[in-house]
Length: 120
Image (tube, rainbow, N blue to C red):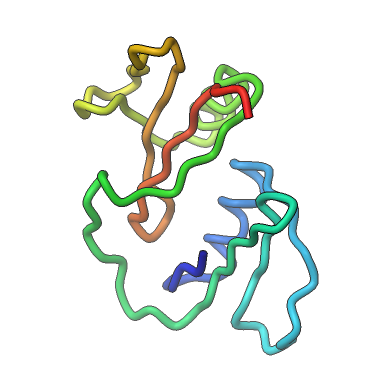
């Protein structure tokens, strides 16, 4: 997955510090990229150069599963980052029919993210 971002430093901070993703070496060394390892064979690439954040539909989102959703919510609240449930109610959690708890939030460029406590 590659995301085109307006401010690489801000987006890198968000994914590294708020979502706690691990960075990995990127081959370009040009100051325009940050790469994150998101699974054994999956990567997230942030690429700077976008001139403006855009509006994105919530249906198109990147999803991460975490062991403790409450830990993520605590980091979001500490950093004053809004989250919501699927219908869009602020600071609310969706419980799916299978019991999985999930929240939705936007990254600094408006890309939607789902965070849930599903068991890998």
